[in-house]
Length: 175
Picture 1 (tube, helix red, strand yellow):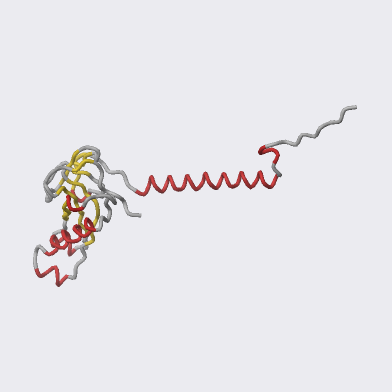
Picture 2 (cartoon, helix red, strand yellow):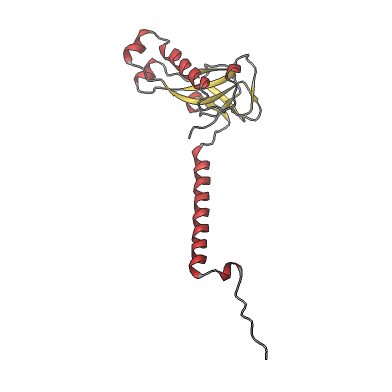
């Protein structure tokens, strides 16, 4: 007479029911977390439209085809190619009204200083960026009437100190 050998299932089917439910729940949670992180990353940095863009509509990360700092509109191009400057931050230039009234260029000077500090500390810029090779300045600085109406933001642009071009993306969004 032969005896029947009881072969218990192996692998996932060999686990107790509570363990199988736990593993399925853990896998579902991991998939959900990965999906949440992917959605956050995708929506965190807005897309940058290419082509002619008004200075008021520029966004940090925009690579510009023009080297001039005082235009009303710029041509936004892909950052993978050479470009003379890149917008890398928004600077809040809120000054005391008395300070702004002292000199007409106070806001532009203050904007340039804020942008220079951003460059110095590599805020909104790649960690390995060699800051001595670049200069930062404010563009889209509001005029007196716009400032009085409450618009206190300017954009910071990055350009090579020697007047050359930038290749690649220097912008890094802050968390």
